[in-house]
Amino acid sequence: MKLNGTSRINERGHLEIGGCDTVELARRYGTPLYVMDETLIRENMRTFVRAARETGLRFKVAYASKAFNTMAICRIADEEGLMLDVVSGGELHTALAAGFPPERIYFHGNNKSPAEIEMGLDAGIRLFIADNFTELDLLEAVAAARGMKARILLRVSPGVEAHTHAYIQTGQEDSKFGFDLGSGQVHQAVEKVLKSSAIELEGFHCHIGSQIFGTEAFELAIEKMAALIRDCRRTFGFETRIFNIGGGFGIRYDEEDTPRPVQSLIAGIGQAVKEAFGDMPVPEIWTEPGRAIVGEAGTTLYTVGTVKVVPGIRKYVSVDGGMSDNPRPALYQAKYEGMLANRALEEPEETVSIAGKCCETGDMLIWDIRLPGVRQGDILAISCTGAYNYSMASNYNRLPRPAVVLVRDGEADVVVRRETYDDLIRLDVIPERLRKKDGRETGVEAIGPFRA
Ligand code: LLP
Image (cartoon, rainbow, N blue to C red; front, side, top):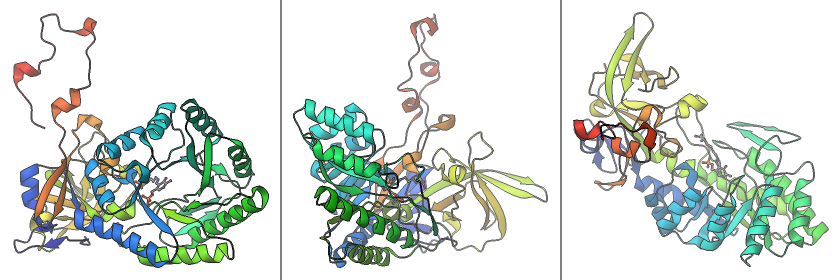
């Protein structure tokens, strides 16, 4: 397993992150446990901001909070001066509750509800990214009813689709997101917005995919968007103030992943922007990475439970979490690396596969990993779980969601508490007609409190 950020092996032969012994963290906070390396998160944010500044453009960085959204990460993004991309009322609520300045928040999504739009307007967020014609109508109606003006970017589907390393060009973009460029929808949308007194157009947005390693697909998208921006100047006399190039910068999950360093990606993007805009005024450029900021900063700790050997075929090692805390292997065949955190210096001696504890055959976290002879009670660490793990976690099989601890300089702080069994039933309601007639609503009081 590649050691990221402040991860290292300490004198006790244990994996240490942020100066904290992970075996100790597992003992203190229980497992599964998400461990987030604050130093690395801040370093990643600073790398983006620095690279953006070095392009010489007016270039702003937002954190795409969908990757990992908690109040603590909102505080960090605020302290580092980033903007924040939210895609739902829930993400917005989290950010506002954390005191993130609304004027640096913007609202994404392909189906914002009237209530979400009201929430954004009332909070005074920077702008909305409008995704389709229905949304334009809705933004206009909601803003007009409040006597307000909704500032927007139009999300454009530029017909460039990025597939990790490679990209394919699609003539007619088949996507639920954005106004289609090829068919002229964007021009219709611009025309419509420019006539509206309740919506103000500030510019355009495009996002071409996620876990992208190179600049080629970005360059193609930038060319197309610059042509659109030039065309809108000519046709409508519209001066684009903001061009948001989206996020999607890839990280290294295992040795097959070879992302270009952020520094060089952003430099390449800056160069592509300058070339594509030529003698046209260059608008403010925005980017909104999620994974590249938090992905490698997260490590999940599990306790090894049962071991099953299928003679001549495979050894299954089961851990106390699984697709409930990391659905990515089951959803995307995502690959991860891992190690025994409590026996980090021991040589690998067997090949095993790591199974989750959910009742689903597909709940496998890692196929074929080399580890020292694994024993019940070992602490297994899986790296690069900072993005889209906690944020996509579920209570499948009624597993309580793990705690999240933020580590830095030998200190560990719980930033999300572990769910308890009582949390799992907190929102359940037993209708009157299903209540037990002996007066006991549940059997829980009779047995005593459970610990998750
Ligand atoms: N901007 C927009 C409009 C997006 O849709 C996304 C991600 C981002 C920014 C941030 O992308 P990032 O820099 O994190 O790649 N659940 C999937 C990833 C879904 C990405 C959704 N959109 C996964 O676990 O791989």
